[in-house]
Length: 171
Length: 108
Image (cartoon, rainbow over all chains, first blue to last red; front, side):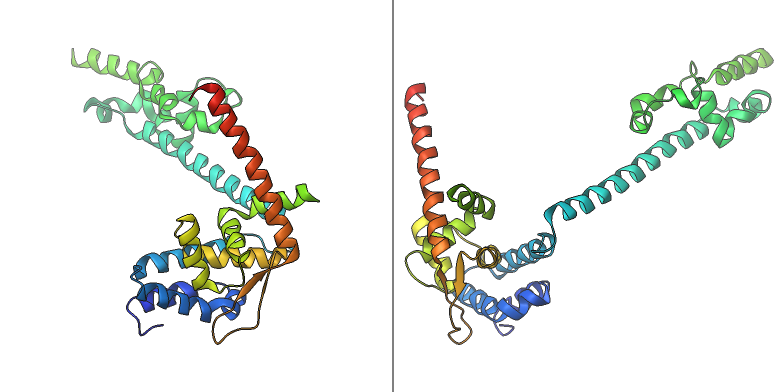
């Protein structure tokens, strides 16, 4: 098989199968691939077909491994990944809101009023005056639509007062 | 029993049905199956798909391997395989008839 053009690719695809499958079908599968290539079928498409078949062979539940158990494992993995993504998405806008104080006046005037909002934890408290209990679900909080008001002066009261203070001083 | 047989083939997928139809005409090995399916159904069965279907059908007891001829393993349809295929084709025929009737009634 490896002597035929594209045989290496097909051989690599066949090596992806479980050992049980290879013991049973590998020889014949290699021969079928060689015949198909001889007929003019592209070696890449044959290799791709075997790659997909190998993936299916690993993923599809065997007898004795109940389908519900496989579904439960997949569900658990999905939940863990989703929860992690939600956590990451929640922390990113909060950090961004804490560090995107606009304008050059901020460093000069930040001391009296923005000392608290600049720390990580109080920032969320400032942005959402309601207690953490009243916060929406993480996905909603992580959405840019909900995170946006944190950056507006209306939600960040200290920022508006900072600007006013800076204006008063410069005047 | 026939309902269960239909269910078995429904879950087995289209490739398995095509393989069973091909084997209903007599035992064949992998390459011959691919060529036969291409001829009667116009479907290009990938070798990965073919061996997945063969594995599944063999596990279900609908086909069985014959003694190997050099590197080739011919397969033949079993008695339960014949019954399952018959039941599945009957079911497809009923669905097809209903579909055609509704197309006529709907004027489409």
